[in-house]
Amino acid sequence: MNTAKKATAALISVFHKDGLEPIVKKLDELGVTLYSTGGTEKFIRDLGINVVPVEEVTSYPSILGGRVKTLHPKVFGGILNRQDHEGDVAQMDEFDIPQLDIVIVDLYPFEKTVESGASEQDIIEKIDIGGISLIRAAAKNFKDVLCVSSMEDYQDFLNVISEGNGVTGLEDRKRFATKAFNVSSHYDSAIFNYFNSEGNETALKISEQSGKVLRYGENPHQQGIFFGDFDAMFSKLHGKELSYNNLLDVDAAVNLMGEFAQDDPTFAILKHNNACGLATRATIKQAYVDALAGDPVSAFGGILISNVEIDAPTAEEIHKLFCEVVIAPSYSDEALEILKGKKNRIILIQNEVALPEKLVRTCLNGILVQDKDFKTDTADQLNPVTTLKPSTEEIENLIFASKLCKHTKSNTIVLAKNKQLCASGTGQTSRVDALNQAIHKAKSFNFNLDGSVMASDAFFPFPDCVEIAHKAGIKSVIQPGGSIKDQLSIDYCNENGLAMVMTGTRHFKH
Image (cartoon, rainbow, N blue to C red; front, side, top):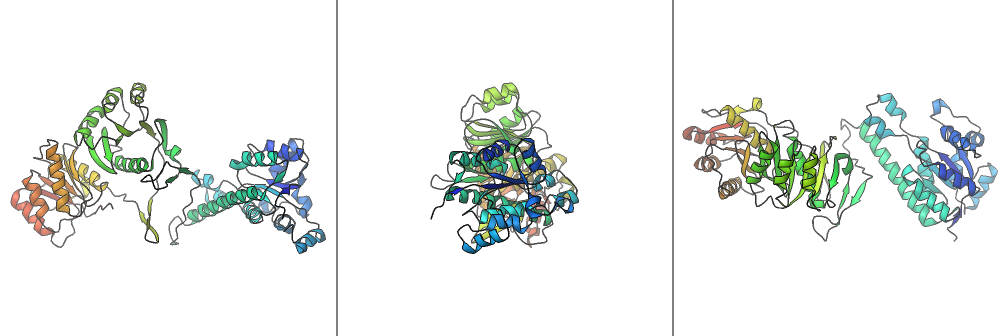
């Protein structure tokens, strides 16, 4: 069977006309008959090229304000007929249906219209009917028809018809059909998600068309791909390509720093998705220096993030450390030159973009979806449960520690003092182990825990943690509460001069 097809006629009806001119001229040069509608027809005619209006084929004008132009048996018959099927060939002759070998059609910009904040009526009018039907029909019949469904593929198509002198191969037609069904399925998912914005239908539709193949996944023997628009969120100024693990750490850093976006200069250092250093200070340089002091060993090869512009003095300090990624809203010119001194150091400017409101992960033979943890503990929501109440300064440190605790792997305990992370115990199977780990770590880096505060991501079922904390010098505790044995911890605090507040909100992070 001869799978090569010589194009004789093309239907062209597109919203985006950038890059279309050379295609039209090439098809005309190859003797391909052109059919078109509306604005595309005028575009072709203005190039001085002959074009047949679809109305001449269907004997119907564009009706209903342009909602119906191509939805007609003579158009779809020309696309869907099987050229090697005797019955189809006979009906093509009987009903005088023109053969269409190429369909170049794109879709109304539905997603961009939604993003623009347009009215519902304007959004509804951008739901393409004829275009998506043409794309599906042409892609289905790839054995005989080549479908171009996006302006992103114009150059690819131009190369194919130029190199083949108007002849297309089955492999190319199937490749373009794959692209077409990617376009159509993404489009339908976007429309569904718009209509289901309140989640009344328990269904999950995720479609990402932009995928970047990474060097590898979490380990070299695993493949890794990032689906998303990284360039919209970050301006990459310098350094090597980000890895799978880099991206996970950057995500953790961005979510953590989001808690401190409006605070005084704050700097965080992360390793394996957890903060190993965090401090809020009067200057970003001091914030960095004090964040580094939290764990200068773990900071090696870490991810650094600032909530304000990084200046030259801060950059000079950072430059002394080997780190993978530096993130900030901006950099001074001098700071940027200093940080570029390490050729592989990744330097990112974080742009303001909306982040997903759902968390999605594979689980067993399915997928788990949940809302993001958008709740942040605030001073006015604290419930003091002990006789001794925390001071104003202690409350500030309790909130500081709570924000950090929320973004640290469970089970976790965070110790803080003077808006500086002293240490944390992360990802332990026992909260007591997490606390002991944090105390040991803080002491190993010469932190004086007298007067420090402790945050826990979940309640204390026994008074063991507050007892250990008290003996280490900790004076104030923040935890969600909710255990049937809460009173045991409260009693110990009252008997030993500790202040404790409860938030009523658990912040597990698994």
